[in-house]
Length: 84
Image (tube, rainbow, N blue to C red; front, side, top):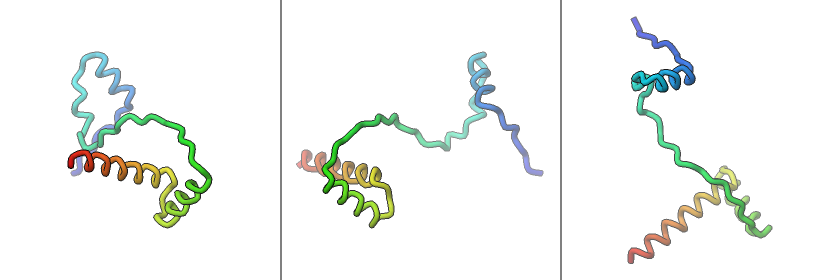
């Protein structure tokens, strides 16, 4: 017979932790660490936005994803160039 575990509300787990109880059994360690995100505003020319939108449509991803991808690529190239 398959063992089923009772779903516990996150608030209940928080209360248990506040009382000093061991709550480790409620975590699987299968999640990924999410790093903090900070929003920024960046101004682009209309032409650059058109280019970004064209690339985004070719790759079927968002404009934001294109910007992040190319920025990551540029940063990686910068650090590689500094190593030489």
